[in-house]
Length: 147
Image (cartoon, rainbow, N blue to C red; front, side):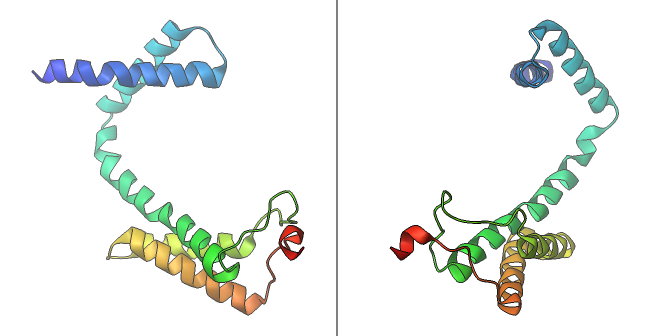
């Protein structure tokens, strides 16, 4: 029964990996890429890759949600619920305050003993609000909204 289950699950998984590899490498050699992908998967399974699944998911749960905290804080507290039109806005190449707030939120979430996603969102939003208030930075002007 276990072998049947593995066959039904691994078939679509290997197909998806081979389709993605063909697209990524711009290759039509699907059979070769399928065999290579299956071989890599088997080697990773033999090597104990599955033991790292839960720590990997915990890491993702710590480092992804703080992005939302920065976006929410920027939209609601900094820009008052209105983003400028992208065609007319002059935006900086990097939002260093946002990246810093994200880094702090991700680190605190990862080290937190409580619910990491909630901690990450809250801390990154709070740090972003504090940093933008301290820097007294003005949001990008929206000429279309001023008319």
